[in-house]
Image (tube, rainbow, N blue to C red; front, top):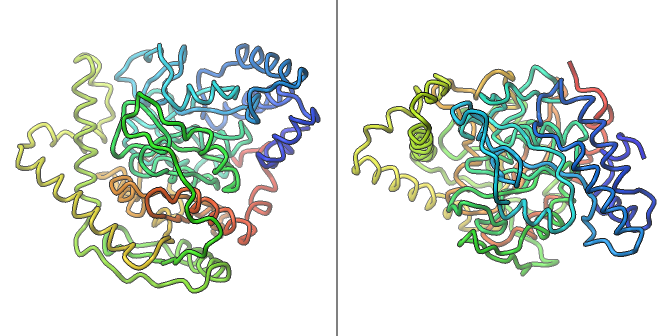
Length: 463
């Protein structure tokens, strides 16, 4: 096997090849580390690359296969994890210089622990933007992460390095986290698939009502297996729950919209891609309902305020002499939270609840909702977003569903005239994750985008 074959193989086929000993974990890790060494200087995606440790773990995995006793079908498969996902011995920066040389983790986060239990091999950590508070790859701690589709283009964020490395052929899955779109946005920018699960379906720590861990893969068909591997309730996440599949084989009622009644205008290339995807989806699950429900207010603004609070709290938690390392653009955005009164905080919560009620209205007559992931295709690599004053403004279609807890999948819906990928989102009702991923895989297959867009990958990121 070579890196081109590895970067195009499905998870199921790779697991089958491992079980038949047609490929070994040592071969997989060697290929993956060689590819990391070949492209990481260009895309600046990974740090704490575990060359020696990964090779040792691969040899141990190979020994288990030779004895016919692998831990499970994921044994020996290389993966990456996000900066913010703690793993023993690896550094946590949260994307920013205000934490100095990083904090070495002494305990595995629940999803990292699960990956290790399954015998997967963590290659390295993916860089992320400062505090996780921009939908970009601009990182104070690690510099600008660059997109293999075009090095001048953004990777999205905050799971930036994981998406960029996966798009460049490194690993079979990258574990990210999503608080406003942070696995879905980079998946859209990098032509990948990602799941923001129902809250608690993939346990993470610290427990959160809005932030979810989620897998990023090259293909939507691979999402379910990784999700079920990670879907194991954990005592460190009090919201963690098992998933169930209650809709196997039925035909969902699907709605579609490109307008929530607020947010930036949707670019023509995104609209064109959306209409194509909607037409293909209607051929699979006819009919598709046009959703005309509008919020009547800007439901993103209270979410943006809640993110300002997060930024200010992290800024305040740093040692005083380190706070000056906060990027001025982010500081100017979140500093107003310093003086917010209890009345203001209550209004933020009230606004978020109005947005959650709007999400319920969107699902009044449908079970699955089709939207774009973003109103834009992409923006320059050095930018934190499309609006300098609001670094996650382009998360109009994603952030609401973190607050409501709905599962949401991003897939590559097509490409613009520059050859850049365009993300399409499918959102389901709570706990319908498995059904949603099945629909996404069928849609992705029907769109036929998997081969054409990746024909020149991963050996040569586009300069």
